[in-house]
Image 1 (tube, helix red, strand yellow):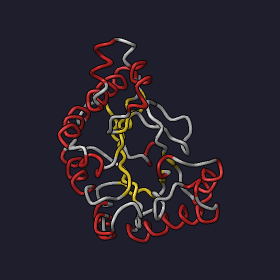
Image 2 (cartoon, helix red, strand yellow):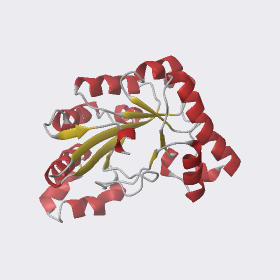
Image 3 (cartoon, one colour):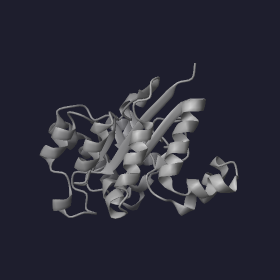
Image 4 (cartoon, helix red, strand yellow):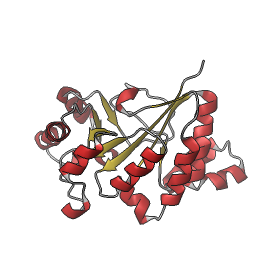
Length: 232
């Protein structure tokens, strides 16, 4: 009997995660929020407060995303290790719960960083690799879809559409592709993993698209809805 698993994850710890969390709850979807407590890519006022992170942890899994969101290969190894280890400590102190999942900022990492993640006690680490429907390595876990239009994925989209022109053109819209990918996993079995950034959804005015996807993938009998940590 095929197993169908749905998981979602959302990166960075932006204030718009609060809106996203409400949508997820309305549709009964589980999620992992990867929080970078001192993310330098945003003004402090645009980030979730520690209290908001704690409140969110009552409904969703909180994962670590480093302290300040650097691309790990661009900083010294001792600094990278500190970012990986201390983000776990900070978030565990905030939530009062074990933080067992990690996400590499920008999907940038080397074998050294994977080892740091393992040594820190994480059990799962997510990348930004896409168009995957399984998990070959829990410390370099790929995803199915980023809630964003990636022109760099055109070849992969064409292949998923089996090179049928009309399907290909429809699948260039990420919400249509997201629904088709769910249908694929529902039929064949596997892991359907959609992820994104709430600030990116807002910037592109994609809340309605995301709502359609959530409505489409939620509340299916026989589908197992899990957090990223529950994949392990």
